[in-house]
Image (cartoon, rainbow, N blue to C red; front, side):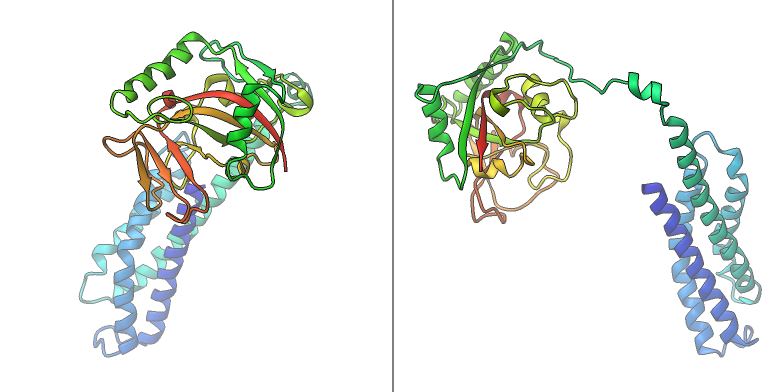
Length: 355
C-alpha cells in the first residue's frame, strides 16, 4: 500500500511539472531571451520550486525499483528517472530556451514511467494472488493457525455458584458503576503453570517493596480490573468451558499465554499497553459482541496520571508502574488503566454477561 502511494505521488508530481512546463511554453511566446513575460517568469519559478520535490520522490521510486527480483524489467524506468533528475542542473541555466523544452519531454516520460511502474506492480500482485489461491483439495486440507501454549498451561474453567464467596467478589467488582449489564455466569480460571503464577507473585513482591499501599486484590496496590476482547468460539456461552485453538480468537489467546505486549497492535490512545478498567461497562465496549470479560488481578503499584493522549508510549515514566486515566481527563468518559509489564497481570475469572 505504501509503495502504491509512492508511485501515485510520482505520477501526480511529474504530471504537475509537465503541465507547468507546457503552460510556461505557451505564455512565453518566444520570449525566452528577453524574459519579459511575467507569466513565463512566474511559471518557471514555480517549476524550480517543485523540482526538489519531484527529485526526492523520483529518488525514492528509483530506490524501490532497484529492490526485489525484477530489477532487469525496470532498466528503462531507472534510465528515465535518472534522466529526469539531470534536469535539476539544466534548470539553473540563465538561458531556459532548451531546458524548458527538455523539461516538457522528460516530465511526460517520468509521469508515463511512474504510471507503468504502478500498473506493473498491480498486475504483479494480482498474479501472485492467483498463484497463492489454493485448490479445493488444498483448502480442505489446510488447517487454521493455532495458538501455541508457551507456558504449558493446562487451564480449567469451573463455573462458580451464585451464593459462593468468589461470586460475591466478582459481583461486587462488576456492580461498581456498571451501566445496564448483568452477570450471566462466572468461571474461576485454574491450571496456570507454576512458573506463570510465580512470575506474577515475584513481580508483585518486588513492587510492594516500593509501594506500601494495598489494593482490593493484594499488596502493591493490586486491584481487580476488567479487560474486554473479542472471541471466535463459544467459551463462556451456555455454560461452555471449552477453549478453542484458533489464533484469531483474542480471548483464548490471552487466557492461554496471559497478556503479551508483543501481540499488541498500534494506534492505541495511550500507547502499546494492556488496557483495563474498574468498570465492567467500559471493558464491555471492547468485546465486539462476545459478552465475555476477563477479571484479573492487576498490580498498579505507583501509577502515573494520564493528562493527554500519547500513541507512542511503550513504557511508563520513571518511578512509576502503570498509567491511570481519570474520567474527565484526556477526553476519557470512564476510568482506564494501562499496563506495560506482562508480569503485572494474573487472569482469575471469566465473566459472561448480558446487556
